[in-house]
Image (cartoon, rainbow, N blue to C red):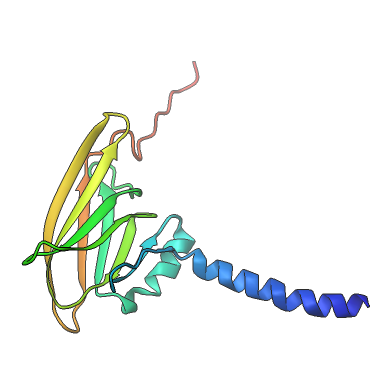
Amino acid sequence: MKLYNLMMIVPLLFSLLSGASTMAAGKDCSQKGITCVSGGIGSSEREELQQQTGQYNFWLRTVANKSGAYLADIKIIVRDEKTKSVLLSTAMDGPWLFLALPEGRFEVEAHYHDNVKRADQIIKKLTDIKKGSQRQMMMYFEASNVGELNYQPAQ
């Protein structure tokens, strides 16, 4: 009887564990026919996401200007540059956002809220997506106390 229970539990555990590793690679944020994944918190999640880059033609990273620290929880809006229609509106689940965009010219708008300064920053950039090409974009924000060490020596 114990062997039978073990035979039933092992496949269940394997399916749960294998599903957990794909979920760890980021959050699916697909909308309106735009395939999208966001994440990159921790080196293992970044490695898993990097393995998926071939599925996407636009890669965005959000970074603190002075320290170079990765930033998450950035609100992203992608608009068709001609029609100004919103193709995607999402909050990044990490510092990386990968999109599979159609051919065209797009405005990428990023909103960052600095909790320390209680200030909002908005950055807008344009990108052209051509068939068979891949584009990368970095957005830098003035972020208070991100990546800084507040070390005080013992007295």
